[in-house]
Length: 312
Image 1 (cartoon, rainbow, N blue to C red):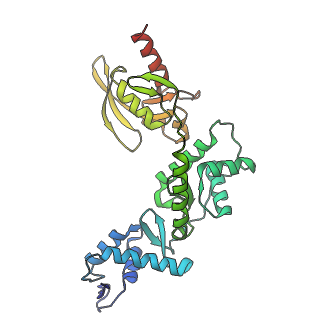
Image 2: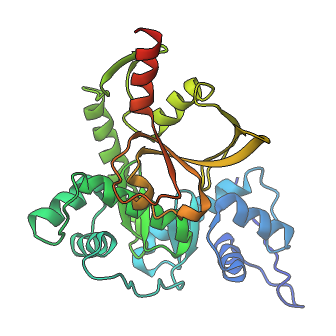
Image 3: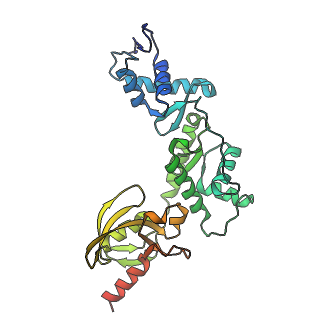
């Protein structure tokens, strides 16, 4: 059934608005990206639209998508993330990155190619073209960490946007037009990934056949041996630092803040503040310049020591 009857209380006069006009008014007033359901809810509660339809959010979403598809760059709307929309007039400030940095190189590559790319593709392009100078052994991991951190810290203000599982693009693009290509590429990538898997070194420890290959594996392993380390875990959180624990001291149990990393050097790559953390728990300790104020627990060594103790 076609949605009809939209009323605006923007002025003293009764003005009829379409769903698109209502969406535009809501986004303009809120000044931030919103989901279709949020736009619809605000429009209805503010009296901007009046509808007898059972699925106003579906109608709102369909009209916004249709407008973007038909008008392209001429549409007032822009997809600015998974399920969120904004206004094209919200011009992104000019990018200003320090020349030669990972983010600067990534931005220039994405700008020149005009298409979403994986972290590996961006890094490979940068190295083959001589755009990036690095002595690190895992430049792709550093590139990914820099882009993820920029998006997480800056949110909508970031110039980068994650598209799919491992692809990145620029906010200034018409992301709606790229959605089909991104989904197709992700499906192809899943098929490739299913053909082979990568595991860590064999450890045969507490039911684990292989050692961790990422931060999640470190957290899982720590959960199995935290008591042997004398640390009780009180809370796990998504923000920095990752966890709060307590450790026995002479006067009682002292609180400690813990950050999990696959390699200790990732702490620096992720641009964490050493003052906000007490302990880095990692699989491999490779950060030679680690501040002395930070204690590092290398689980690879801990596992070996425990195995030697239990099986002399």
